[in-house]
Length: 192
Image (tube, rainbow, N blue to C red):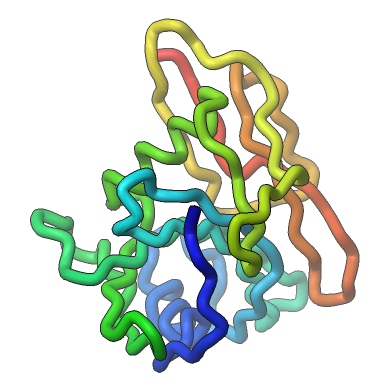
């Protein structure tokens, strides 16, 4: 199980995301520098214990109507060989573990493998900020197709999303800046 260290990261994850997010083609805002707040998320464990895996929901509060984004991240102790351009969110100095290379999880094979394991019921979601603590609020709805997984991560989250229409949907919650708690589909699966 992953250990959550109560320490510093310089720059912080939110600082890295503030620079990285507006460069993504799925970013809906028009601010060059969004104002992001951490709004939710969960972790998965890497069976090898090498890669930190976090699914973070951030809300951009610069628009009149805040927008929630899902950013899966893989934290590594070395650069990920063969990663495509734009996959690296940035590097950060971790107070215990040293330099961490933080990748967009949709380009990290360990993150994708564990997300697929979660959708098959073979991995347990963990609380975002507590070591060795399952998060029962993260649920999988539906049945995984027998012919394989094509996983789609929902980058822009809407609380009105449902898992209907997809054989499998990963559902979790986050909070809007006014404190309203909502749930939505973070990822879905289609037949190959």
